[in-house]
Image 1 (cartoon, helix red, strand yellow):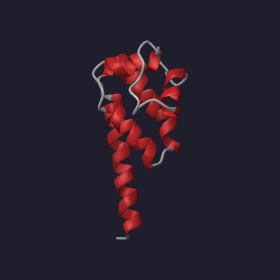
Image 2: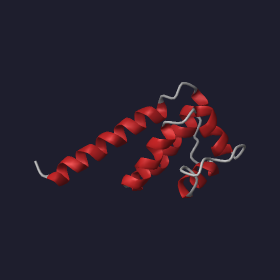
Image 3: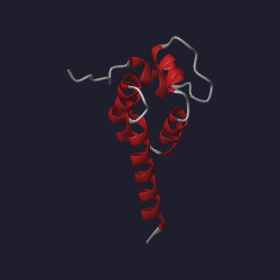
Image 4: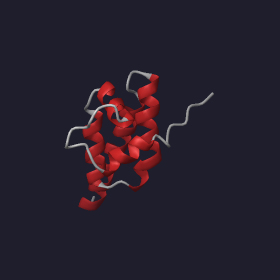
Length: 96
């Protein structure tokens, strides 16, 4: 197996793990916000974006939701373009 195929498999494994973690947060609100963000934007991600998202997943849901809603300032290591996309909340699709 080539290094490129191993790297690709590792990246795909990380994406799958991130998707699971994004949709299994513990509250429905966090699932929709974080999981919905993943579903909408992960397709164009590379290593840097996935690194950012994995760091976000390590944070408490209450904090992530506060940063996404703009009620609390985010830490410097998470602030940036991806968090600005999350703050749009245009990706939350709540089934009725």
